Image (cartoon, rainbow, N blue to C red; front, side, top):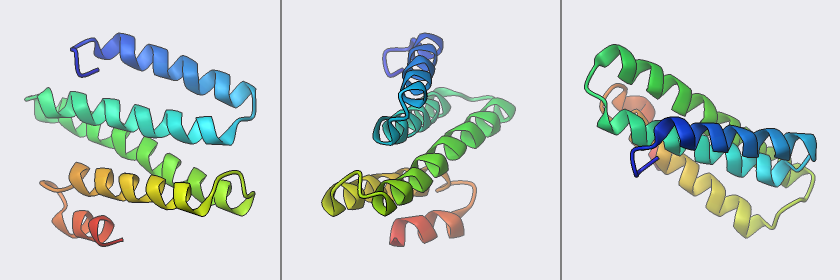
Amino acid sequence: AELGEFSAAVSHQEQYLKISEEMSDLLEQQRAHATLGRTYYTRLMAEREERVVAELRKKSGQYYISALKLTDTLRSKRLSTEKEIMEMKARLHLNIGLLYDKVNPDMSVKYLKK
């Protein structure tokens, strides 16, 4: 995505997500959701049209929140170490905080403080 091939990046990452779902691999599903969130965020940062920015922000946020929920599932099923869970959550809270920094400072601060 950072090389400007947004559509190809999303396509490959959606395939990665689909395969991880078919394999019932929750860790890889979490990673795929986080990566898709980051890809939409990267595209958002290069966009100037507000309508498109809003759509990209929504998609990015949805994927980040999904990834965050999956970390709780990983924890409850003991599929990852506590250290790995905390690192995943920290990155996601930072990413969500940055995503909403300019449009919803209160939400941004909420996630950045977690």
